[in-house]
Amino acid sequence: MLFMINLLLGIGLLVAGRKLFWLFVGAAGFFTGVDLSTRFFQGPEVLSIVVGIVVGILFALLAIGLRAIAIGVAGFFLGGAALLSLAGSLGFERGDFIFWIVGGILGVIFISAFFDWALIGISSFAGASILVQTLSLERPIAGIAFIVLLIVGIVIQFADKNRGKRDDD
View 1 (cartoon, rainbow, N blue to C red):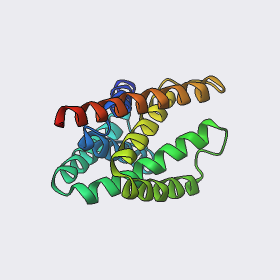
View 2: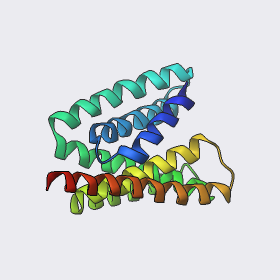
View 3: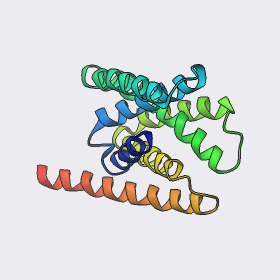
View 4: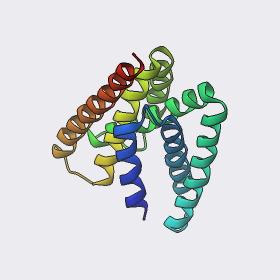
Protein backbone atom coordinates (compact mmCIF):
# COMPACT_ATOMS: atom_id res chain seq x y z
CA MET A 1 0.00 0.00 0.00
CA LEU A 2 2.82 2.41 0.89
CA PHE A 3 4.42 1.56 -2.48
CA MET A 4 1.32 2.74 -4.37
CA ILE A 5 0.96 5.92 -2.26
CA ASN A 6 4.63 6.78 -2.82
CA LEU A 7 4.32 6.04 -6.53
CA LEU A 8 1.26 8.28 -6.94
CA LEU A 9 2.70 11.11 -4.84
CA GLY A 10 6.01 10.88 -6.70
CA ILE A 11 4.31 11.13 -10.08
CA GLY A 12 2.01 13.92 -8.87
CA LEU A 13 4.91 15.97 -7.55
CA LEU A 14 6.99 15.30 -10.65
CA VAL A 15 4.42 16.56 -13.16
CA ALA A 16 2.13 18.93 -11.21
CA GLY A 17 3.93 20.12 -8.06
CA ARG A 18 3.79 23.80 -9.05
CA LYS A 19 0.17 23.76 -10.09
CA LEU A 20 -1.08 21.72 -7.14
CA PHE A 21 0.88 23.43 -4.37
CA TRP A 22 -1.39 21.86 -1.74
CA LEU A 23 -0.23 18.43 -3.03
CA PHE A 24 3.37 19.62 -2.70
CA VAL A 25 2.78 20.70 0.91
CA GLY A 26 0.61 17.67 1.73
CA ALA A 27 3.28 15.33 0.36
CA ALA A 28 5.85 17.00 2.61
CA GLY A 29 3.57 16.32 5.56
CA PHE A 30 2.91 12.75 4.51
CA PHE A 31 6.58 11.85 4.12
CA THR A 32 7.50 13.65 7.33
CA GLY A 33 4.75 11.80 9.24
CA VAL A 34 5.79 8.43 7.82
CA ASP A 35 9.48 9.09 8.46
CA LEU A 36 8.94 10.25 12.05
CA SER A 37 6.53 7.43 12.91
CA THR A 38 8.93 4.77 11.59
CA ARG A 39 11.86 6.34 13.46
CA PHE A 40 10.11 6.59 16.83
CA PHE A 41 7.48 3.84 16.83
CA GLN A 42 7.95 0.20 15.95
CA GLY A 43 4.55 -0.70 14.61
CA PRO A 44 2.82 -1.98 11.51
CA GLU A 45 3.19 -0.18 8.19
CA VAL A 46 -0.47 0.85 8.43
CA LEU A 47 0.32 2.97 11.51
CA SER A 48 2.99 4.86 9.56
CA ILE A 49 0.61 5.37 6.65
CA VAL A 50 -2.17 6.67 8.92
CA VAL A 51 0.22 9.06 10.69
CA GLY A 52 1.53 10.21 7.29
CA ILE A 53 -1.97 10.78 5.94
CA VAL A 54 -3.06 12.74 9.03
CA VAL A 55 0.05 14.95 8.95
CA GLY A 56 -0.27 15.32 5.16
CA ILE A 57 -3.90 16.45 5.45
CA LEU A 58 -2.95 18.94 8.17
CA PHE A 59 -0.15 20.29 5.95
CA ALA A 60 -2.51 20.51 2.94
CA LEU A 61 -5.08 22.42 5.01
CA LEU A 62 -2.30 24.69 6.22
CA ALA A 63 -1.30 25.25 2.59
CA ILE A 64 -4.77 26.34 1.64
CA GLY A 65 -5.14 28.69 4.63
CA LEU A 66 -1.61 29.99 5.06
CA ARG A 67 0.00 29.57 1.67
CA ALA A 68 3.29 31.44 2.17
CA ILE A 69 4.10 29.86 5.53
CA ALA A 70 3.01 26.42 4.38
CA ILE A 71 5.16 26.53 1.27
CA GLY A 72 8.17 27.63 3.31
CA VAL A 73 7.62 24.74 5.72
CA ALA A 74 7.11 22.33 2.84
CA GLY A 75 10.23 23.66 1.11
CA PHE A 76 12.19 22.88 4.26
CA PHE A 77 10.82 19.37 4.70
CA LEU A 78 10.88 18.36 1.03
CA GLY A 79 14.28 19.96 0.48
CA GLY A 80 15.60 18.04 3.48
CA ALA A 81 13.99 14.76 2.46
CA ALA A 82 15.13 15.11 -1.15
CA LEU A 83 18.77 15.85 -0.23
CA LEU A 84 18.72 13.02 2.31
CA SER A 85 17.39 10.63 -0.35
CA LEU A 86 19.89 11.82 -2.95
CA ALA A 87 22.76 11.46 -0.47
CA GLY A 88 21.62 7.92 0.33
CA SER A 89 21.46 6.97 -3.35
CA LEU A 90 25.00 8.34 -3.81
CA GLY A 91 26.27 6.09 -1.02
CA PHE A 92 26.30 8.48 1.94
CA GLU A 93 24.96 7.28 5.27
CA ARG A 94 21.14 7.63 5.11
CA GLY A 95 20.87 8.49 8.80
CA ASP A 96 23.12 11.53 8.53
CA PHE A 97 20.83 14.30 9.81
CA ILE A 98 23.02 17.08 8.39
CA PHE A 99 21.68 16.33 4.90
CA TRP A 100 18.14 16.92 6.18
CA ILE A 101 19.05 20.28 7.74
CA VAL A 102 21.16 21.53 4.81
CA GLY A 103 18.54 20.39 2.27
CA GLY A 104 15.81 22.04 4.32
CA ILE A 105 17.64 25.36 4.54
CA LEU A 106 18.40 25.27 0.82
CA GLY A 107 14.75 24.40 0.13
CA VAL A 108 13.51 27.44 2.10
CA ILE A 109 16.03 29.80 0.48
CA PHE A 110 15.28 28.47 -2.98
CA ILE A 111 11.52 28.60 -2.58
CA SER A 112 11.58 32.13 -1.09
CA ALA A 113 13.71 33.62 -3.86
CA PHE A 114 12.11 31.95 -6.85
CA PHE A 115 8.64 30.82 -5.87
CA ASP A 116 7.31 29.33 -9.14
CA TRP A 117 10.72 28.12 -10.23
CA ALA A 118 11.32 26.75 -6.75
CA LEU A 119 8.07 24.81 -6.84
CA ILE A 120 8.98 23.41 -10.23
CA GLY A 121 12.52 22.52 -9.16
CA ILE A 122 11.82 21.18 -5.68
CA SER A 123 8.68 19.28 -6.64
CA SER A 124 10.47 17.74 -9.64
CA PHE A 125 13.49 16.94 -7.45
CA ALA A 126 11.28 15.45 -4.73
CA GLY A 127 9.11 13.53 -7.23
CA ALA A 128 12.17 12.07 -8.95
CA SER A 129 13.72 11.15 -5.57
CA ILE A 130 10.53 9.52 -4.34
CA LEU A 131 10.10 7.52 -7.56
CA VAL A 132 13.72 6.31 -7.63
CA GLN A 133 13.56 5.34 -3.97
CA THR A 134 10.13 3.69 -4.33
CA LEU A 135 11.29 1.65 -7.31
CA SER A 136 14.40 0.54 -5.34
CA LEU A 137 16.72 1.11 -8.26
CA GLU A 138 20.39 0.17 -7.90
CA ARG A 139 23.36 2.47 -8.58
CA PRO A 140 24.19 3.69 -11.25
CA ILE A 141 20.71 3.12 -12.74
CA ALA A 142 19.21 5.08 -9.80
CA GLY A 143 21.35 8.12 -10.59
CA ILE A 144 20.56 8.02 -14.29
CA ALA A 145 16.83 7.52 -13.64
CA PHE A 146 16.86 10.39 -11.13
CA ILE A 147 18.43 12.80 -13.63
CA VAL A 148 16.07 11.74 -16.44
CA LEU A 149 12.99 12.01 -14.19
CA LEU A 150 14.14 15.39 -12.86
CA ILE A 151 14.52 16.75 -16.40
CA VAL A 152 11.16 15.30 -17.46
CA GLY A 153 9.42 16.86 -14.44
CA ILE A 154 11.00 20.27 -15.02
CA VAL A 155 10.15 20.21 -18.75
CA ILE A 156 6.52 19.18 -18.13
CA GLN A 157 5.97 21.80 -15.42
CA PHE A 158 7.80 24.53 -17.37
CA ALA A 159 5.64 23.82 -20.44
CA ASP A 160 2.51 23.95 -18.27
CA LYS A 161 3.65 27.27 -16.73
CA ASN A 162 4.26 28.77 -20.19
CA ARG A 163 0.94 27.41 -21.47
CA GLY A 164 -0.77 29.22 -18.56
CA LYS A 165 0.95 32.49 -19.53
CA ARG A 166 -0.22 32.17 -23.15
CA ASP A 167 -3.78 31.48 -22.00
CA ASP A 168 -3.73 34.70 -19.94
CA ASP A 169 -2.67 36.84 -22.94
